[in-house]
Every structure is written in C-alpha cells, then in structure tokens.
Amino acid sequence: MLTKVINIILALLFVSFVSVQFDDPDPLLWVVIYTNMVVICAWSAFRLPNRYWIWLTGIGYLIYAIVLFPGAMDWFKSPDRSLLFDDLAKMQFPYIEETREFLGLVISLVVLAWQQWRRRV
Image 1: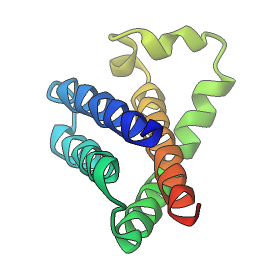
Image 2: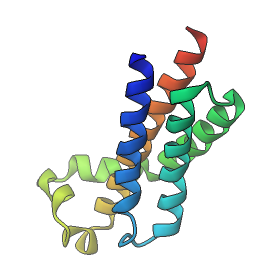
Image 3: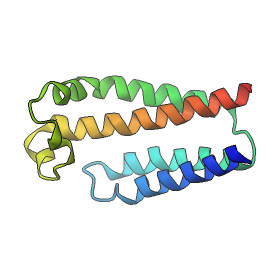
C-alpha cells in the first residue's frame, strides 16, 4: 500500500515537471522524458512495469546525464550557485540550463533505481 502511494506521488511530481517544460528551450524532449517517468510511476502503482523498459530508460537517461555533466561541474565551480534559480541566468550562462537538465535526469535515475530495486524485493 505504501509503495502504491509513493508511486502515485512520484507520478504527480513528474506531471508537475511536465507542466513547466513548455517554456523550455527544448520542450518536446523534456515532455517526453518526464511523461515517460509519469507512465512508469503510474504503472508501478498498480503493477510492476517491464524491467527492460526501466533498464532502457535508465541507460538512455544516464548517457544524457553524462553528456550534461560538464555543465553541472561548471555550475558547481561557479562562485554564485544561486544562479541556478535565476530565470535570466540561463541566457547568460549556458551551464545553468545544462545543470537543471542534469538534475532532472538525476532525479529520474534515482526513481528508476528505486523502481528496479522494488522489483527485486
């Protein structure tokens, strides 16, 4: 019962992520990424999703996170890390958008890892 509630909450969280992607520089990609997570979490609330889908999604997200990792490191090395939350900073510093995307992928990967772990329990 608890995992069902957690999965519903996660699905709603990813729905909220989808809803803020429409003003993103690359909205279609991120709507697909987060909608996929909504489907996985909603499906997991009622039964276990296909493990190959989880693995394929995880591998794809991990590869993309590795591509974005240098931008996240630039943000981490920057003197003003609060720029991550500044809407205008993404136009001044390309690494801000890359870091936001990287963190979204990390959140997704953590949820996918939990889903895969849950399959084994």
